[in-house]
Structure formats: structure tokens, C-alpha cells
Image (cartoon, rainbow, N blue to C red; front, side, top):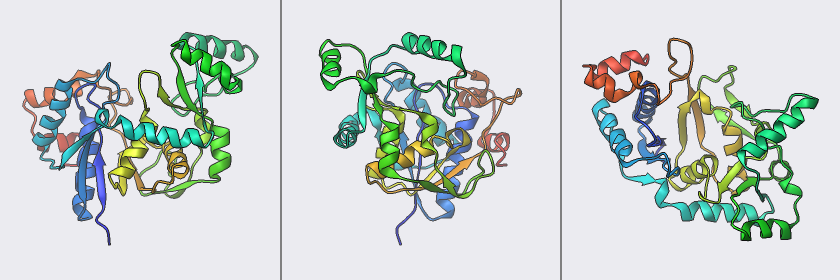
Amino acid sequence: MSVPVFRFAPSPNGYLHLGHALSALVNAEMARAAGGRLLLRIEDIDATRCRPDYEQAIYDDLAWLGIVWEEPVRRQSEHFADYRAALARLDAQGLVYASFESRSEMAALVAARERHGAWPRDPDGTPLYPGTAKALAASERARHMAAGEPYALRLDLSAAIARAGALDWSETGACPRGETGAVLAAPAAWGDVVLARKETPTSYHLAVVVDDALQGVTHVVRGQDLFWATSVHRLLQVLLRLPAPRYHHHPLVLDSAGRKLSKSTRATALRMLRAQGSTPADIRRMVGLG
């Protein structure tokens, strides 16, 4: 029997807060209970927001909490070739196309469409891609790219779903609507998601799926805010013929207004709480594990 593999995968674009502490601690405890391994992955594909001092703070905070992880740590910025290879496999299946609209242009398209009724939004509340780039001729796309225009590489979701068929995943956590066991995936809710951009050869969705497979992750334990994204991840796993881990989505730590914690809310940053005299035991109590 293979050893279960868990992972905690923060982004170094700010300091860890209580929500991250909960996820890291739950991962560590589930790995310990299963006799498994705990990996740490640094998801640093966003070069404009990720910083070395934030990355070092991640190591410091986790060590202070008493969490032990395996070395070496995988840093996504060192593995862009893996993501390019996965993107090329999807492109070879005819499932990738380039779009060229700016954010302001897409906002204008959504506004125009909403004059005739509500435009659909993804589970995070972002409008689905409203453009028509999928209909561009290959020569037209090539002309735009040769001119150096910014672009996003998108998944042709309707074609991808037709190829993959019905999908589900194994869920053991506390899900937003009480889902557990075999959960039916609904990737259509996300529209033609971005897989990469001109300046960044991957996206969160693509990178996390590739990394989990390459690292042999068997159990993905993360917050409920990523529950719906699992539909996209399962779709990519099937298209890329990658193994499907088990999923466990845990409740979020909320602020006094009932909102998800943000890295911009410095009062909940672990380093600030530590400086104010909190102990690791205090943190456990704050996140409901004490």
C-alpha cells in the first residue's frame, strides 16, 4: 500500500494568517493520523506580487507552529517547463485558444451584454469570458501574437467537457452545501478559464494540477473557498491523464463580519499575533483546534 501524501501550498504574496494556520495544521494532523508524508509547496507564479521575505516568513511561521515538512520544497517558479509541457498537451488536443481583450475591454463587453439580461458569473463572482476570440481564424491569432499583443491562453471548455465526459471526485470534508462522498463536478460554471498568459506560462488551475501529479499527492486538504475550483481541476486531470487525489475541504476562518480572512487584514497575520505574545497553542484555539 502506498504512503498517503498531503501538501500545504501557500503563495508568498503576503504574510500567513489564521486561515492558513488552520489549513496547515489540518494537513499536518491528517498526514500524521494516516502515517503519511507532508509536503510544502511554494506557489509563486505571480512574479509581481510574490516576494522572498514573504516566502521566508512562511517557513518561520510554520516552524513556529511546530509543523514539519519534507525537503526539498517545490517552488513553482522553478518548474515553468512542466507547465508549458502540460499546456502543449492540451493544445495538441485542440483545447486551447488565445484571447486578446484587455480587462477594460472585457468589462465593456459584459456591460453591453447585461443590457439584455444578467451575464453569468463563475463561482468566485467573476463574469465568464465574454469575448469571441475562439472564433478567430488561426492566421488572425498568429497576427496578434506576432505583433506582441498581450494575450491569455484559454481552455475551450465546451470542447474539453465533450472530450472528458461526466466527472466527479471523492470528498471527505465539510462542503458548502453539505456535499460529501462522490461529488459531481460542474466545470461549465467557470467558462473558458485562463491557463496561461503571455507573461506567465501557467495559471493556478494548471499549475496545481500538474504539481499534485508530479509530487504524488494523494490527499488535497484545503479551504472551502476552493471547493468549486475542484471541478476545473478534475477536468484538467482527465484531459492530461493524471491521477485524481482525494479531496477534503475544511471550513474557513472568518472575521467578525463573517468574511473570509485576507492577507491584507494584518491583525490576523501570524507574525503579528506572535509579536503580541500569542503561542502556538493560542493559535490552535483561535482556529478551533484547541
